[in-house]
Length: 183
Image 1 (cartoon, rainbow, N blue to C red):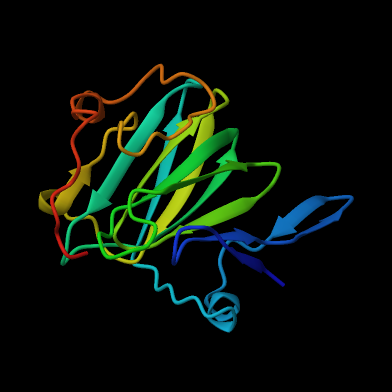
Image 2: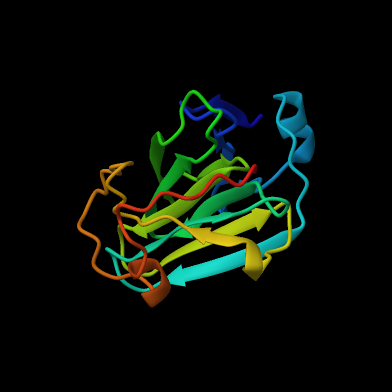
């Protein structure tokens, strides 16, 4: 049975899918809508993505989608390891501008569910890391927002220095906050 645990961010959960091992290797469920619903979590998959990150210290994000294209994401690391971060951007939330981080790795098999209205990003903490993620909405480029990974109002404690980012992510002012958008 999948273990679903709340995090300090409302609507954000970690998911631990048990592994069944034998002499052949192991089997692990990657997603179960029935098990999530039994835990009171609703998630309907619309798009699947895979990202490969070559070098440790590479940061992807912090990305979010503005309304009406806000999305939930379910992510898991299938190779290597990443430090995954969720930042609450919902102005009416008691945890507004709070962040939560967790290591996702091929060894621990953990997944994270990112709620609508939150920015999401991760840092590869090992070379050659691969993340699979599912979204409940299709990506809409015109609705994309970016929060600087080193945002001074949020203060994410990345486990190693940021060494690589996309030009788009690196161009965001670290003092800038997103404008209200009604996620």
